[in-house]
Length: 474
Image (tube, rainbow, N blue to C red; front, side, top):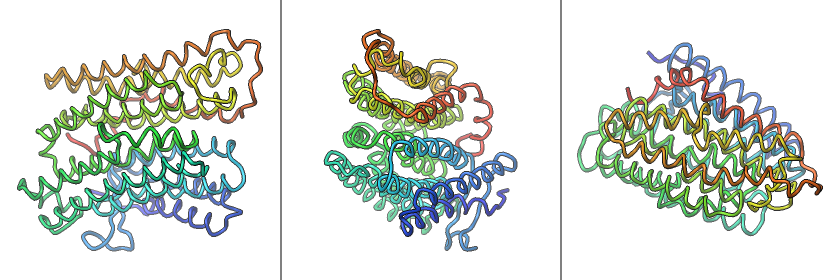
């Protein structure tokens, strides 16, 4: 039985109203965005509480339900994404508030709150076409965030991000057209009982999956992703890597688990798993060769996209929980490291790998954050990254498919190869007598908070697992 709650709608309406008012009243954009953020966190918290206490909940926009109206549904996956956005997003925004000022801060906050509204709507959408609309809105906001500084490199990266996202959208729309021709509905609950195993349904799934893989940056469709992450301001890179970049994957999970569950573990799913393994290896290898800190983290994000796709060939409850743990732990760890890199960049003047030499002596909080977040990326206990990789590896071994587990272990070892050089140079005495440029203390505290969160996630696996049982394979 699915309950009903009005709080679901407010998780979308509050940030959308904040973004609209921020554009209309430009000079008060930041306080308006802050008020909208507080309202969004409150409504999201109420929704997640209801899901935890009473199971999945729903709300019909305008009192029109499916198939004519827009249904919003909060299940385990939706609650997970609401929580992740509601914690990581505001923390990154606090960091950005200390980094930017004036017109640039107003642009950033208006775009971020709009992206937050789109992400919440996507997390709660129960219709294939609404998933497309909300994903496109998040993409447009992401492009705006990438070019918020208006530099030439940022403009080029934003344009590349937009054009390739449009190609992915075209494939997804063609899949929607085929799916509607086959089932005469786009509502997820109704599709589950109407989709057959015929060629039309298979072609629709293939087209939508290809488009979403491009949007997610899965190997070999990832070349556009690192330039976007490295050209954007660090706070924006944190949002892209930690939150917005996960949106296409959420749509994929909705399709495969709720509409095409029989495809899990099949031939197509194994292709996705193989591409995920290649993403882990290739992204990690490029991170090992990178000499800029932001580029290291960008390629690490490419690798962590690969872990998410190991769920499809495994298709078990443990694999789903492991993939969900990757979403949450990587969001916190990646955002923490991107923001810590900004502190380093502002302290030294650049973000080359040797910029960290000796900086830990004068920026200890930053490198505690880098160390804790790096533990999660490597998958060391007791971090959330360890729980994620352990669950994926265990799911593979329980199915007797050891090669997926080997890929997970290899990914952790490769991650150590690009995380340890950052920390090794940080404690060298080479900068012991030099004076660093000023960096804001709030930025260090936010980075440390997210790093601690990535660590704490490894200490509460049973609570998150209980929430995820409300969505995903049994």
